[in-house]
Amino acid sequence: MCKDCGCGLPGDVAIDGVAVSETHQSHSHDHSHDHGQPHDHDHQHPQEHGHGHPHDHAHDHPHPDAHPARRMLSVEQGILEKNDRLAERNRGYFLAKNLFVLNVLASPGAGKTALIERTATDLGTRVRLGVIVGDLATENDAIRLRGRGIPAVQITTGSVCHLDAEMVSRAMERLDLNALDILIIENVGNLVCPAVYDLGESARVVLLSVTEGEDKPLKYPVMFQSAQVVVVNKTDIAAAVGFDRDAALRNIRRVAPHATIFEVSAKTGQGMESWYAHLRSHRERAPK
Amino acid sequence: MHEVSLMQDTVIIATRQAKDAGAQRIHRIMMRVGALSGAVPETLEFAFDIVAKGTMAEGATLEIERVPIRCYCPACAQEFEPPDFVCECTRCGQPSTDIRRGRELQVTSLEVS
Image (cartoon, rainbow over all chains, first blue to last red; front, side):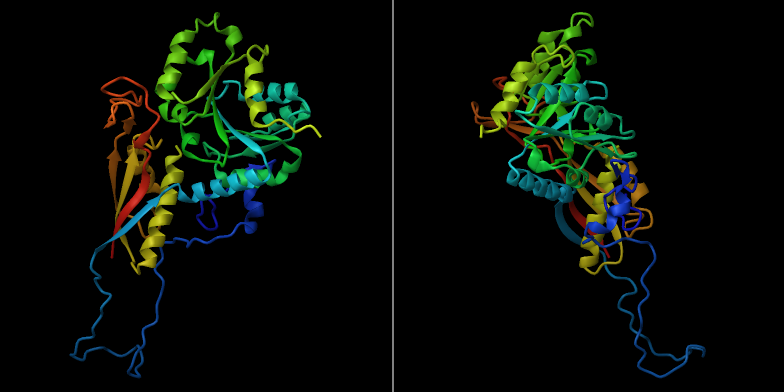
């Protein structure tokens, strides 16, 4: 949380190593701040008297604020409303830029970066990819992607377990969106918290690697239920780890009957063609 | 533990509403939390005590109404409450993508003075 104002922006979030709090003045604060101290207020004293003398006269002073009655206020407001509003702003911006945006979610180690790396490399210049990558710490992923010639911005969240719409809107300022066809947002490795934060993406892609167990969709239903696409990764080692493919697909379809499923190995390239076809169908650069 | 962020936002919403209504203190915050909201009520309560400190909601009671998942089956033209997180019609067994309740994450009302 921002130390200055108590807004939702965590103080230790950084984009490409620059603390967001250092650029904090650029976002507008339209909320009121909360602090425990009561505000002093002046009383109008109709009589001219000093404050030192004993106050022993008999008549009552009415004091209407002494014990105000308790009352109910109807609120009916979504807790994520602020994030949702910012996400819609991002979405409108992406639409105006004609950009297809994916929010890629998975457990740590499921192969998110490997999938993005291979996808960007194989699609080459026909479909131009840029990446915003979120991690608690280190810029390793952005450095790894940039090493492949992929434009990448790193968000380090400090202790925050998810990306939110505001972090994305700040990170995207550091990418030339006009030079991209697809923006991939690699979320923090976590199958719980990022599920409820809309970032303004066009589609959600949830990865499940074969080493994680076939019942993962049943264990993390909120995440899988929110996916438009589920990618089963590391199929090259499925046999070695005794992966029950039928059970996994059945579980995905039970939780997310609407989702499109791809089975790939980002390492060997197996199955990647149909994933690419899916991406191309959304964003192929028109021949000039 | 995004429940801490969620409760920070809750306290911000509640204090703004209370101040707008001219109140000095918040005694009770009532919330609605769906089974598919991704938030754990017990964790929200734990986080609330921490984030409310030093605000006008300090010491307030948090009341959470839990909302179960309700899905709609177009074939049976009925709403149903799945026993778990899998929206399969309790009558015909068909999967449903029409989730009508369970995603709620709202502040519903406040008791203030």
